Image (cartoon, rainbow, N blue to C red; front, side, top):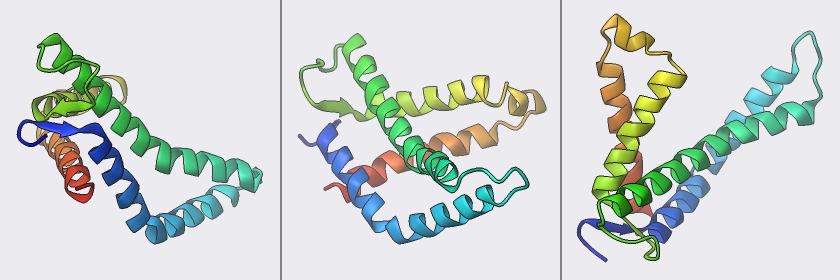
Length: 142
């Protein structure tokens, strides 16, 4: 489908290809974070730290991807744009999911600190980054 909808498998394909392209840099980042995390006075087990770093690096990507798809499907079904049975989401659903992700992050992670300080630009840039991440997944997965 072309137009206002994007196939979920195209986004998933883009996620896999993007991770394969970034694998050398991700491997260096994972090794660096694991060594730095394991070299503290408590001497944690190296594999435990490696598991935490892997969960952070790949779990955050997968979590954001699943959030975007899930919220987009709910948004599309509430507005009756398409049904759950079709493996597509609308671009409006992805934009709504990105905005909602930033709002939830501001409430639960940042405790609205940036809003209280009047720094609204940070949230705006976060929405732009998440939307461009969705477009990049679409473009790479094509």
